[in-house]
Length: 339
Ligand code: FA5
Image 1 (cartoon, rainbow, N blue to C red):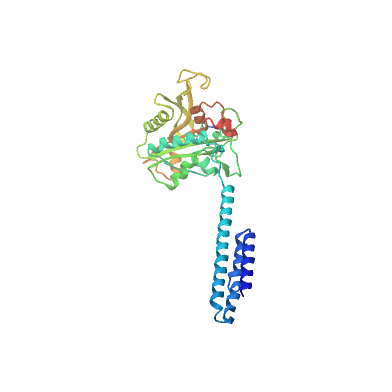
Image 2 (spheres, rainbow, N blue to C red):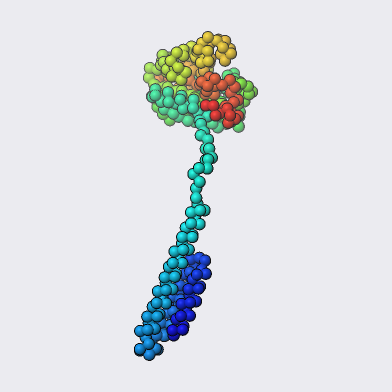
């Protein structure tokens, strides 16, 4: 038995020293010390020894066990250290390596100007409404007092989908859509994309943006319209900006007007941007035509209102001194980065 124990000891120590990973080591532990392990088997045979030999053999067996365990623990620690070092090396982060620059994006000029416009109107108590871009002829024209034969339909070259369905040519269809579901007081602005089959040039795009304004309540007069637009223009372009209201014609407002602001670039002196007039047209507006109120189910004897529609793209260009509307749609990052 002594021989057996010494053989196990020597073999185990040699095998342990060759082990390269923790799994292998665990297999060796089972081989010698497990329930069915070699050393365990020998210890089980202890009972067959003469009584006087047992203490000596027992002691030797324990020594062999401790030795194997000790060697295993030591080797295990070495393997774990090696593994840790390997992983540390693998996962080391060199904090001195220059990082990859993450470029900060910025808002598109149209978004920035729209945000500013929304803030100004919200400050005056307006709410934001929206409407569909694929619209019924009814809301885009009929309910705005523009029957099928009306000559003003020619002014807004329309993309038709069917006879009755079209891409909205302005944000004004949201006027009657809102009146149908909301009774006065109404005080909304409607930002949105609109479509016209206009030829593309520096000031025209077939897709552009408008912001509609609509106020309906008792005793609304043109003084309210002028006041609201004057505050708006001064907040957007600066305190010294002046407004000019020119008579105009829209079928859905009466009276109708176009509003000019003193040129932002030259301050009214006259320059290339304002064609040397000192003024720039920024929106169309007027007092809501009684027929439109009727289409919206609102009593035109009791209520009155005003509406306006501004071209967001042109306002953005004015604000940022951009001289060609096409730049807003080309998505050239070198251009967009400047705002
Ligand atoms: C209208 O669209 C009216 N719905 C505005 C309105 C609303 C008047 C409520 C009264 C009451 P107009 O067709 O003028 O009006 O267009 C309004 C603005 O849209 C113009 O002042 C202009 O700035 C802009 N605009 C018109 N066509 C284009 C285009 N092709 N590209 C870019 N902007 C355009």
